[in-house]
Every structure is written in structure tokens, then in C-alpha cells.
Image 1 (spheres, each protein chain N blue to C red):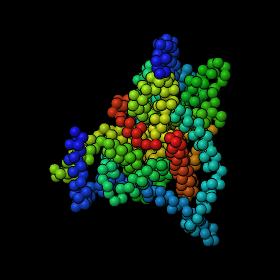
Image 2: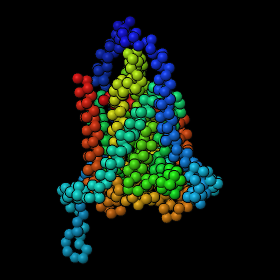
Image 3: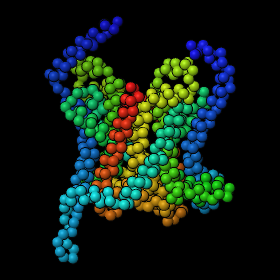
Image 4: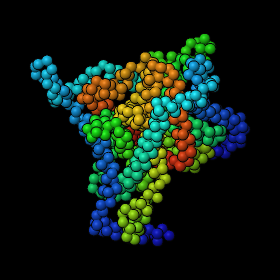
Length: 318
Length: 293
């Protein structure tokens, strides 16, 4: 049977290279041309441009009351400005605290809910899946707006309860609560999507494997932790990298909460300082240098995650 | 061996532990669902409150101002809200369709052709995945303003069309969904490459393209940074930037808070409906299986 089916395919495979060589097709170039052109226009050129201007600065030269503005090559001076800018460093620190809270909780909850959706005997699975996915449809800025009002002492349902109990308002928007408040917004928005990605991966595990573990006497928790979690590792890595990239781009949420609280300054997150430098202070070279530093940091973190995962996987196999 | 030993006890143990084992996970799941739905419920309740009631009544008590709020929202600044909604639809709809087509063509080329430069392009795309949007947004603004496009609707639309992740997903999907024999057969029948792409490849890739379109649509609809940087005239704002401008002005005059709240409620309603309706067409296994650790 197999022989008869594969034989013509194999015969054709032998003839294909000949055909290809005779008439090299232009098709792949036409097909990928729009993507390549757009990629060069909106990714490669901006990156090169950013790198370029990050090495220049406008200087006032010559005497007189005004002097002459001149663009000069300043080597790494802008980068020195960036790494010695205390506001930006403080912003990076704040972003790190936020990320350390938001990313693990988001992924932990996504994994927990995905495992619950995938385990037998749990009720209301369809409802739970749909409900937890709903926030995905809410734009981050709108989510921040909604939560912002739920944090504001005068409109917060949570603070209403604690105030009735005589405990006073919950300090969501005060310095001691702001990290949790911001992390909560992105956790709320991100759990559903990551849950579905992990859940889809869980569904693709061969059922016999889980049945076999069950027959061996493993409990559902054991099956989840020892069989299912290791098998969905690729999906977990992917969601982890996306969550990290998302955390590093923290911008919209603090910007929206800013009018509601004094805790968030206009340089609270690194991206807010970059925006400030570029548009309010008109200092493009420093904004560009800060962007480069942030991009390199982001790429380094992503690569580090990938390498760590690969390393632990290999060690686990041995 | 262990099975034969434990089997006699199994039914007894199950009866007592499984009831508990069933309910604890169910409760956790329901708590998660409530957490996800609370802000949505709150924003709908709050949007029924007249500006005075917003700060005075219990936050989950419905108010009396729903109709007035709706009227105020749609008449605000000569119907700016409807214009923002239209802009969001334009950016996400047109951008999503174009982005899906561009991704499908490039993904198919990368998956099924061995061509000079293909590999470099693919590696460049993977690098592009890791570059955060903000680092591109500021230079993109500068470039487009040199081309006198900054501030126009094109300045938001054009950068949205290229999506390294979309191309990557299309490549993964094309690898699995398009049999090489079918392409060969079409070529032997004398079909042109363009006809093969339109007649054979696109239909086969359709389920994957729906997923890419949805990801792009929601992604562009939810995008804030790019339009926030590019646009300065309220006529071109999408909903996200428009609502932020409402809230920003609201800190001066709290009456606008009611507008921002009902604006948020109206903005999320169609998108929640869309996502829930289209949920069944998602091929998320594409994303889940996309990366092999």
C-alpha cells in the first residue's frame, strides 16, 4: 500500500528540481515584496535612523548672543546622558517592580485557569472560559480608564466597602498601592488570552498519555503538574516572552491614570520620559539613545529567557 | 500491579474526595470569572449615573442619567465620539485586512519557496518581533513627518500593515496546510503562480488568516501609542486616544468624567460582542504550537 502511494510522489520529487532550475520563479519575490518594502520602511529605516541620530547633538557654537546651532557628532555622549539620567533610571526601576509583580501573576493565573478548564469534573467551564477571555476585547487604555475610576476613592466600589467598615479608602493610587494597581490592570487584561493559548496547547496533548497516568494512580493535581505542564512548555515560553515584552512597553496605563493621581509623574515610566524628551523637550538625540538602550535591553531579556528555557529543557532531558 | 491493588478502594475514595475535588476548582474558576467581569459590570452601572450621582451614590447602584449621558456623549464636540469610532473601525478594519493579505503572501513565500534572501528576510522578521513598538514609533513619526504624512490617517494605517508576528504565523500555517503535491499539480496543469496563490493557496490558508486578522484587528483597535504619537487633530483620533483626551480634560472639569465612563462602556460593547462571536473561528493552536521550545 505505502509503496504504491509514495512511488509517484518520489518520482515527481526527482523531476521537480529540474523544472525549478530551468525556470527560476520570480513568484516568491512578488509575494514577499509588499512585506519586505513595508518592513524596510517601518522597521529597518526607523531603527537605522534612531541609531544614527543617537550619536549626534545640536550644539551652540561661535560667539554672539545667539550663536549658531550646529549638529555635531558626539560619540556616546547621549548614551552617557541616558545612563546618568536619574529620572530615567528611576523609571526603569519602577518598570522593573511593576514587571516583577505583573508577569508572574499573570502567567500563573493563566496557567491555573487553563489547567482548570482542561481537568475533568470542573463545572461551568464554558462560562468561565468566555468570561475570563472578555477583558481581551477591552483596549488597555479603556481598561485603565475603568480601573482608574474603580481605584478613585470617591467612585471605588472597593473603597466604599472598606469605608463602611471604618477602615478608610484603599490607597490604590497612593505610592504604596500604585504598583499593585497598575499590575492589576495588565493582569486583568492579559490573563484571558494567555489562558486560551495555554489551554489550546493542553488540548493537543494525546489523551492516552493522561489516561495512562490516571491508571497508574496519579491524582489530577499530579497529572497537571507532572504530565501536562512539562508538555505545554513551548506555549508557556511564548506567553512568557510576550508578557515580558508587554511589561517593557508599559505606557498607556500610567498615562491614563496620571490625571487621577499625583503619584504618577510625567516621567513615571521610561517610555513616558522618552516621549517627554522627544516631543515636550524637543531633545530627539537623547530620546533616540534611550530608545536604543531600551530596545537592546528588551532583546537581551527575551534572548535570555529563550536560552534559559533551552538550557533547562536540555538538562531535564539528560 | 498497582492498579489491581488500588481498584477495590477506588470507588469509595472517589465518592468522598471527588465531590470536594470538583467544587474547589469550580469555585476558583468562578472567582476568576467574577474578577474578569467586575469592571465591565461597573462601567455599565456607572454609565447610567448622572454626573452628580457619580460621586454621591453607592458605586454599584444604578443611576438615572443613562439617556442624558448618551445624548451628551454623541453630541460632545459635534459628534466627535462617532468620528473616533469610525476612525477606529477604519484603522482596524482596513489595516487588519491589508495586514492579513500581506502576511499571507509573505508567509506562503517563506514556507513554500526556497529563494535567495528568503532566509535573511525571515531572520530579520524574528528580530523585528523583539523590537518594542515605542522604539519604532518615535522615528516612524519623524520619517512620516518628513514625508508630510504625520497627522494624517495614513500615518496610523501604513505602519499597522506590517506585522512580523502575522507573517510568522502565516508561514507556520502554510507549512502545514498546503501540500506541495497540490502546488506541483497546479503548476503541471499550467496555472500561473498568481492563479495558484489566489485559487489554491488562499482558500487553504483561510482558517489561519482568520486568526491573523482577528489578532491584527484587536491589536490595531487597542493600539494607543502609535496614534497618540502620530495624530494631533481630534478628527483623526481613534477611540483609545479620544477617550484619553476626554479623561485628561476631565481632571479640570469632572463633568467630563461621566462622558469618559459612558464613552468607555459604548466603546467596549461592540468589541466584546465581536470577539465572543468570532471566538469559535480562532485557530489558537497556531499560536500555541508556533514555537517549539
